[in-house]
Image (cartoon, rainbow, N blue to C red):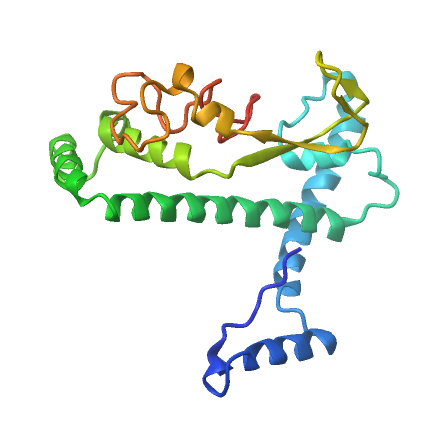
Length: 240
């Protein structure tokens, strides 16, 4: 699990002093993330025990939960007689960190794209004013109103399209695989997708695929959360 660092409030003494303190504390055995790990272990242990008991009790009629915890419980290394709850908690914690990081990263890119293109702010603002008319007497918008923010949605999708990494979505080969051109990927090797071939392809994105066109997707029925062959930022499969 990623170590949580103490905020660098001691750097005012001299630059890098906080890093010295962090390394010293970790060397002495102080790990500020342990208390969070213990909370996660508590809940993981309860859920794992519950699932094992229910699976044994109901047999073939047991309904398998579709989530990451169940995937971990079905790995070859999982031993129901010797469960490493700390390891499971660490894997879940890693995914929690990744989800927060990617969301923050994407939002930051959207804000930067908007800040660097102030000519579109008024048009987006006017759309918000129009959609806000659907709010109730308490100023609350129904969830369905989000579907009417088509220009904002298009702007976000365009930002995601052009600010993503060039190579992403790593996959591990479960067995030796040979492509039609003879290229081979050995078992257990990781392969990344070269997404520029998707995001900068005119046949998939339309005219001028390398340029930022904020309203490119308004009339395409393609939202910022809808995956497809032309938009693979969230991967694929049933969870994307």
